[in-house]
Image (cartoon, rainbow, N blue to C red; front, side, top):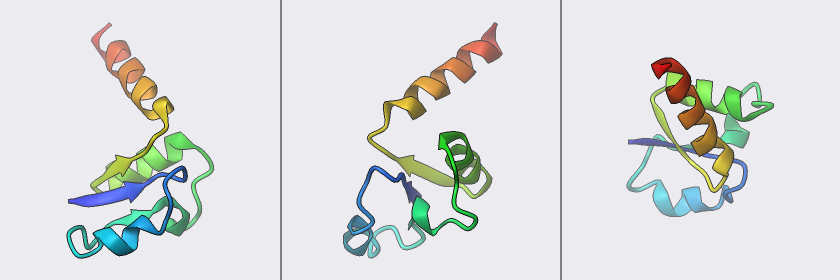
Length: 71
């Protein structure tokens, strides 16, 4: 599993998780640097990452997209 850590999570956690999640990255390492949550979401989707975040915006945004698809 590839993890993509959002800006609200310290990049230092990668050092501890690399042995288990070798292809994981922090969003600050994406080039060009994403400017907003949607760009982070798109990058994760295009590159098969799972987003790790404390930001509730991702959760709310995901559900709003799901509901709009069902409508």
